[in-house]
Length: 177
Picture (cartoon, helix red, strand yellow):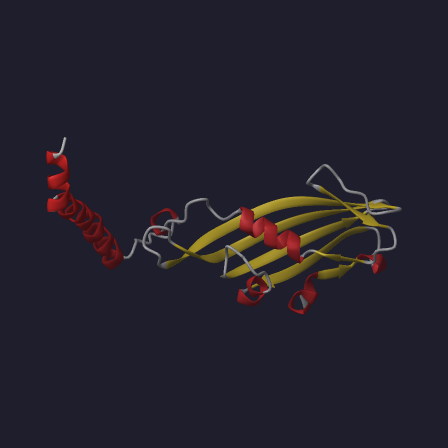
């Protein structure tokens, strides 16, 4: 993931206290992740890193728009996003697994923290379960051509089923009862 090198924060050289980092998220960010729900977007990330003696406290603010495909008409639409999340990074002698999802444990010898996967997860978790143009809040409407085609195909299915039931072979089998 060389494309995501700018998301690596060298925290060892930072003084104790709060530090702010800003990142821009675009198509190249999502291309670095193979099976991303989001393929494109124009997002900004403001990261406030509070460095303390034994831990780092990260406050993420992710805002902007991401491009999604409508589940109903398949057209692409812009979905606004405004997410605020917190992540805690603790230092230990050896990397232990934490039961708490909000806490990441790093070895003391680590000198950098890659925040790209955290940002990626926060964005993907904020994707609505059902993507719909009309519910995006931008006064967008589903593609009328596609909706008309779907309605035509939906009504066409009942005609096809009726044709299947009129098969004379079935009538001959029904007479055997």
